Image 1 (tube, rainbow, N blue to C red):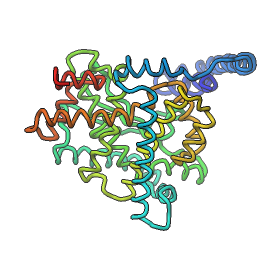
Image 2: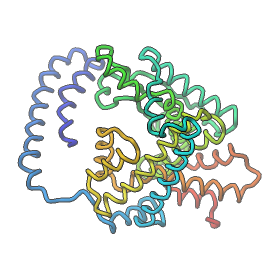
Image 3: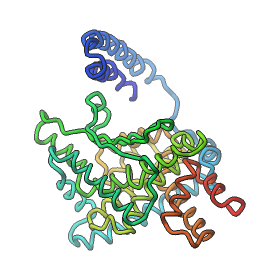
Image 4: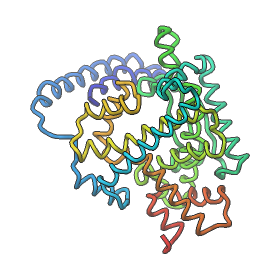
Length: 388
């Protein structure tokens, strides 16, 4: 399935990249790219027609290896059985919270019906980029004014349109952190504009992915005080391993950004009922990731069963559900990182506050973020020492 997208690298992305970097090579690269794309298509056909029919492997890595990755890579004490139990508990608890909030909003409609209608409230194509800029700025201002998290010196965030050559692989938006060794710590948030030549139906479908209930939560998760602030702080760490969190500490990185969503609701930034319901729907999806992560790799769940689960329990569109499950089959233990990371961060914060009762929330967050990107067990040891 991944190989099927490879021809686009040569036939679409390469010529578009050349338009900005080396215009004099566009014609040559287009011709060469077309030939390379055809060669890759032949390779894809070989895999599809000759290899795949005879393939006998299984994507599931099994309980023993799954538990070993949890233990050795993520440095956690729970195994896949305990993980699955936690996932179900979190899913049911979140469904209950969503049902209660939905009844407050409209007692005659379900949470899913309310959220589906809310997607129709979105910026116009002309206001899309500006709306994200305003949301990022508002989140940053709130963090500063309320003393939630200290900002690292010199950090900045730029919001720009997605470059043309990246639009085929970034349908909506994405955050690109500053490099771990870059002197200028500027993150970039790209937003893919709506194609002006698309049909009105296609434009509306794309804009529904940028609903007004979702954009403020996205600003929190991706920027302030989420990924951008955390990674900007990590890039100031003295040692390289503490900066290389994307390789070493996915539970902390994803858990921190997810923790920030709930934190900003508790502190009053996310206060509209529809926004709160949207945040809970994202939490439901993260709980489902735990269940599917363990079930696909250790309990014999099929890809179709996983897709159906996301459609029925989380309300994902079929295409999005299929893409999610395909990713889960290739990244065992990563999907559980979001919610499990958040739960472990909450425990760490409570422990650290008990040991340091005089510190405010800003100082607690500052101590955690200045430790760099570490597996949470190592961060606990760094912050609490022998008491961890």
